[in-house]
Image 1 (cartoon, rainbow, N blue to C red):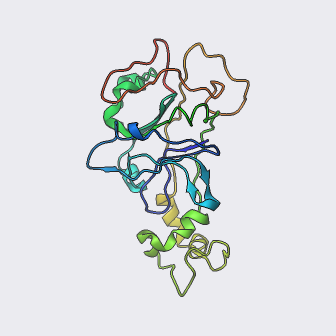
Image 2: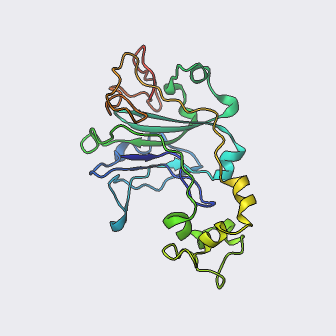
Image 3: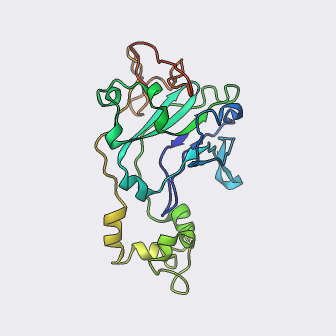
Length: 248
């Protein structure tokens, strides 16, 4: 599986999505138990099965969506919890990081007000679907997504790289593709310096104490690909992770 917790192209808002090569669906009866409020995008894609050639794009839960500029102007912790019940994503503002997290003893059950997305797994179809993961930080220039969406982006159009000078979304022909030509031009240097970068203080992974390390040398989640037995987060109530355990 592939879990995208911060992903967007150009000036579009970020999406949280989950992709698998097996049949796995979000639990419809739980989708709206966490994500409520005026800023929540309620569009839902239930099936997590992904095959781009057949337009199966993976699942997308209700979520708070924000642009890259918003994240730049509002720094904080992007946290993800994975347990047997599903995946929870949070954005905790820099000035509100709770003591449990700053002391490396996370208690995500107290983070509900910062939740930006909740992907509840259907236990019948999603059991054991997610395997050991690797954390990937990537900035891609152009390509199928960003290049293909070039003309739909207000910020991209503002560069002036438009027809008839070039062809938007012509990603298979770089010599004429608007995005590729712009990225190859001297004018792109300053643009990329001020926009295309990460400023990351740390990356941390927590797992249950007493867990036997995986034999797999790579992968950021080393509990043999097994999620925590008990939910770490329970929306609208109290649910504590087992004593002596950490969130993942």
